[in-house]
Image 1 (cartoon, rainbow, N blue to C red):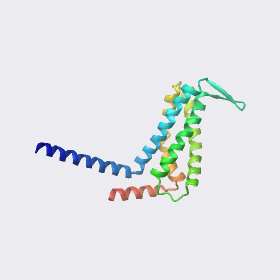
Image 2: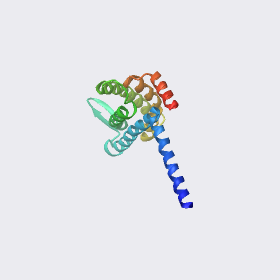
Image 3: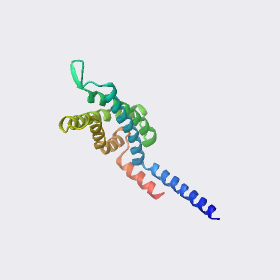
Image 4: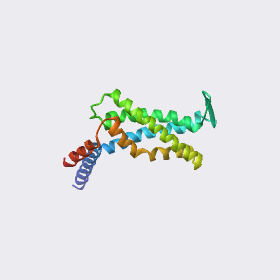
Length: 175
């Protein structure tokens, strides 16, 4: 009898966890955090690997310009993270957008270019001015720009008004 009660309690707790998880995944902000987190992990891991294993010299010359290794590592890792982030965001977060995938990608890429230069500015500031270790500076720069990214991608990349977010939240809360 006691074994049956424990089994039933375990089953009820499991069902409650599934329901809570499903409710969380209906929240667009939570889905965006997961999407951005996946892109962030790809970006940060690629940055670390590139910085330590590929761009090992402190500086490189390209077309007459001199680039330091953390800038080159950022360029490649940021691109990889953006690709992962776009695909997950497109199909998992803002999937109700009526814009075409090409239009979404062009807008997403435009925001990413602005984001890249914001990240580059912060990365250079943290490394050059504050003497931070570049992989730590990369994480700090990315996290400091996260929240602005959600609202810009929602309103611009996927053409969803912030009003839409509020009405979707209200609909989810009434269910």
